[in-house]
Length: 372
Ligand code: SF4
Ligand code: SF4
Image (cartoon, rainbow, N blue to C red; front, top):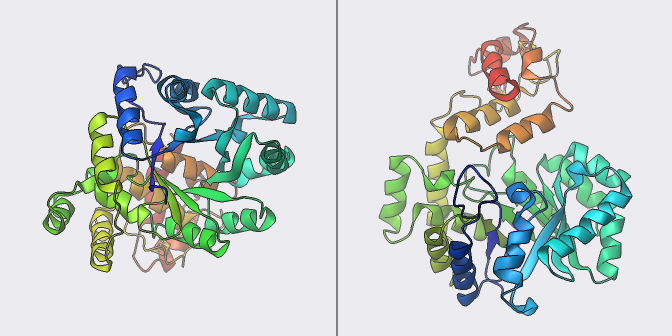
């Protein structure tokens, strides 16, 4: 059975952190060598990663140095920046050249949400991927996804030809009302497709948890890193085929590969510990919204109140510069909902909120955070 750790090529080691294309190639080669030596094979890249350079650097550090049957490569169709079928074809052919391969093992329509899905349907992207598969230019077709479980269910129902789904999944987002990792996972299980996990450590932030959580994990397994809990949580879900980790240093790779070489799923007690850890992390929340949704129906501006609060809490809690997933989710939500800045302060929601949250006041902060 393939080992469940994939090399995410979105956060590769750099010589200058301000220059996304300044790869530390020597370190990267060493990382690739150890990864392969330890029996791992899966590499995940995309057109726009590292300022459009990730695919090319992979060619240099992996493709030109190893036989093709030693590794599998996933790349993705950048549907958010393609507007004609001709450009779609041209982009794919260019990607093969950039990576230096004749075929991709997995090729995904990148980052589907309400908007990009409409574009993919318009450009017949799923039909195009099926053609590529018939021609042997890709072995498997799939999607990566960043929206609600409801939309995911619709896409998988409308396109049963999709073979695998990549989603954000980690123990903190598992029950999140906005990211919906757990609900999305359940939908994929319902459709009986394999799951590829992205953001298992939430951009590195679950390697840096509150002291209380850290000591809880250390007490249970003194020799294992805090980050290992996040990776192993994701890998322990039975439908998960691969967990991607965006490894930025040899040390991270050494750590990840050490416990994933002979992976053992978390026990029930350990799973319970991650639930507790999520509770502790969540207790640092800025807005105590329980997502009961009592307020939602009455809002005259159709503002997605609990979803915005969930994203606001995530952003406040982790507050990591450059970590923009929450902003992307916010931008998805405002397609069909009023923006936080459109709140007219009617306070209908406040009258009904069992948590007595001053919604109209917090909305101003949400607007500042996501629209400013
Ligand atoms: S106060 Fe704002 S968020 Fe609340 S119901 Fe009125 S418009 Fe909607
Ligand atoms: S009523 Fe209050 S707790 Fe419930 S979803 Fe709305 S803001 Fe959150």
